[in-house]
Length: 169
Image (cartoon, rainbow, N blue to C red; front, side):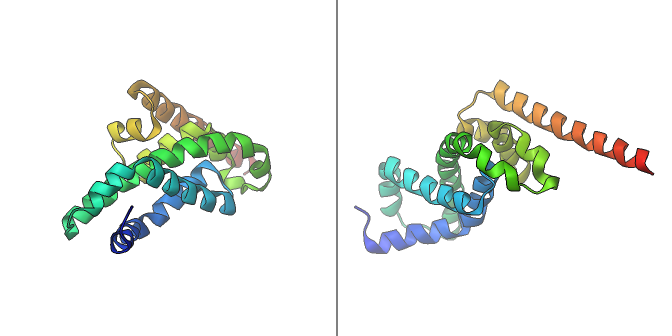
């Protein structure tokens, strides 16, 4: 069991990650309430399944440099659970959230949920390929394929929009 003092230290390590965790959750499920719940579920799944890692963490003294390193590890571990849960939940909720996605984001959310996750991890979070492989539990060739296909689909849509706007003028 985590001691109360240690629990607050873990919470202090997690608090700066909230924005990034919510960003990924909203990428997977574009609904405020569902994204918030996904953040909670991802953190809880991490705490339940990684008890040994958390226990080791609570037994060490942590300085500022180590805290940043641990925060990055925490982020990757929690994102791994969040992506896994979010992918399953996204398929269940897809019809509910499609109706209120703003038009400027519609093409992004029309992409497969795994493609959105990989693109967000690469371009928003700036993770390396190895980290994305680990977080999404995909082999390298699939990560590369999803990045390529996602960029292609979005750029194709952008060029189509540009041509449509030019033809109106």
